[in-house]
Image (cartoon, rainbow, N blue to C red; front, top):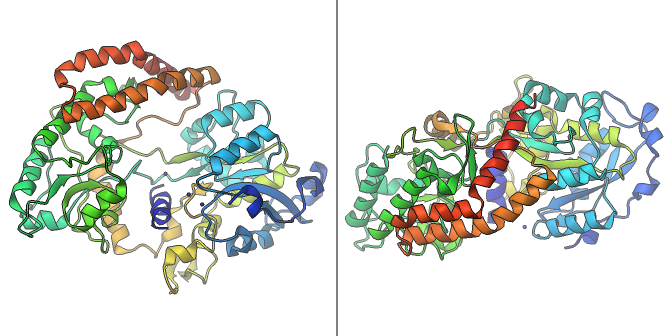
Length: 533
């Protein structure tokens, strides 16, 4: 439960699991009993206003389901049915088995009318769009989706990022133009900062090293034991993206630098700097010796025991326990010996593949109008917060200002019974006005931390591009071996099992395994994306 709440916090704030398909299906009319395409257009579809259809229709939907409540019983779904005249027969699947069931559905030929929160991969979009299973959406957007069309017209980079190589749009994204984090940033334990009289946080890697050494030697948790762990991680997966920026690298695998050159991260000099620093921390006892073996829960237990000085998480209190505390400061990206550092790899603000219409759908025009509502302010409020009066109410509707409505128990768990937008990446847009009046002091603290510490160094590492089918196949083969090799060597370099004097031999091995070819393929895709106006 706690994991779901954290995942939703990421999706909602910085906008990136639990049962079989049949268990969630209802006895609603099947697709074959829906109005024919002719009756879903013309007189039955209203191009403006509500209801969307004059005669009610039923469509089938396959979606990820966090398992909090039957979707048919959710007030948001019931409100949408009354508003639009469109009912859904849900063929949902639990989070942990959804991808398997999605693959079975594609293989079976028995498609739902729509996929919702399906996180369709770029390969699935290209393959099933090219086969005609997913229908092109661009003409429907132009005629039936004024909210989506306005967003795409005003943000051509979004249109480029959801247009496949054959020129079609086969899925709709979740859009959060205010998103900053790819993963949770790194944080300081505020109690340790205070105990060590740190009036300003480190700004360079050397200053951080000095601070971590003090943590080890000066007992900042005050228990008289040398049990402090200056730096802890889970296999480096939670810190790699953030730390690489200290050596001028924007992305974990590939990134386009300021000169638009695509780089394969594991063979860059900056990556060597990152490994060298971590090896120094390891050798000097400043790094958790269980880094490469522990789970996230084990790391968090150390945080709640007040042993950790710096760590990564979406919010520091997820690791340290207790309530949100602004004294637990966000780390600034640190300057290193590498020129043009630091940098910060920013989230592109898009999560692709969130919604698609299949060729089974007899009412694509009505369906497009339904989904377009989620890209409006009113639709975003309904799906993110639930109907007015349950979790919130207006204090100034004209200016979109709201206040919370008290509820019994946990607010997020209650919200999960109101709307399907919980624990999954859903289609729609994150509108800043949705939370107007509802932000806590801690929300405002996070916004300020992002603006002051991350955004000055931020750049999207690599745009959301589409590879061709041939490129996808080649990349898959190359990365299958390289990803494993790089991960193994990262750990060996850090703990000293492989000396860093062997760096050149390591780079040569990467080149033999196709590192430079990876750069070439992603460079070609990046150039196509840049030229696609």
